[in-house]
Image 1 (cartoon, rainbow, N blue to C red):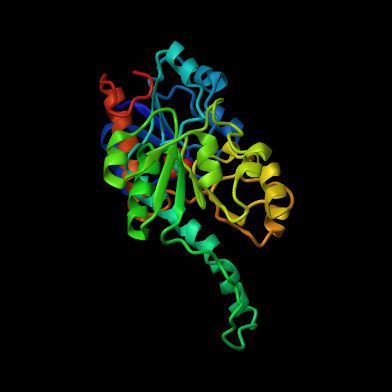
Image 2 (cartoon, rainbow, N blue to C red; image 1 turned 120 degrees about the horizontal axis):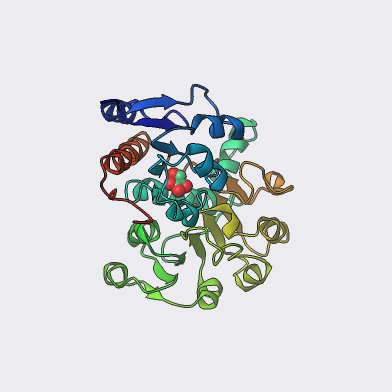
Amino acid sequence: MSKPKVLVTRKIPEEAIQLLEQYCDVEINPHDREMTRKELLESVRNKDGVLCLLTNTIDEEVFEAAGKQCKIFSNYAVGYNNIDVEGASRRGIAITNTPGVLDDATADLAWALLFAVARRIPEGDQYIRDGRFTAWSPTLLLGRDITGKTLGIIGAGRIGSNFGRKAKAFDMKILYTGTKPNHSFEAETGATFTDKETLLKASDFISIHVPLSPATKYYIGDREFDMMKNTAILINTSRGPVINEKALVQALKEKKIWGAGLDVFENEPELTPGLTQLDNVVIVPHIGSATVESRLKMGIMAVQNIIQALQGEIPDHCINP
Ligand code: DGY
């Protein structure tokens, strides 16, 4: 009996590919770049399953091109806003993601950004490289204290609560908001569930950990920046469009807030004009889960999801069972 056919839209860790090859006939994007839309539409044809990335828009056109035999699109990410899940459900196609295995890496990066902005690490690095460090100075690159401050977490799900637990080491008061309270998180950290306005007004640091949906698009814009302290630092490792990036650039320029640390952008990989000219923002290219360990775990999980679906089971991490 021939093996089911699977497309992998971009090279992922070899160990995960080897596991997939035990069960499937695997075609991998041969290029060290994103597939073009045309390549994607051609390559999905007649596949039984597809392992795709958050940068692949998976919609009706892709489902149609894949054909009726296609059973699963396995996203190599925890977020799945790139996929028309309702459209997939109408066609009986399973959509899966990789929850849990990237929580530490993403929460750690949020902390790295928080420290980088609060203690002005990239500016300090650049200062030395530019040959400007001639003597210790009482006023050089003054940042903000972290220990003992108030941390506001928007969305205390898997990643947000992981991020919050790590705040215990810095003796922080934690506020959080979201669709519902997370009682175990409160018990572990003493965090207080509150409304959005209270959190924005009271927090010294605000970190965003919500999925992108119509309800969270532009969750932070002009109105919200006006509520924040002018010493506040905003961190986003979730999805770019949760923040209105034009409003953010304006808020940073006008010093409505102290600074921001961003791993994700509204129109990734494009950046809003003016963002890169600002000293009070630290930007990294969507690397929240980019550790060797997490990317391997994501690969294995994404592959296991495909194997389960192609063996007629409901995959463990199916979004639309
Ligand atoms: C995700 O998984 O959704 C991250 O944004 C990338 O790993």
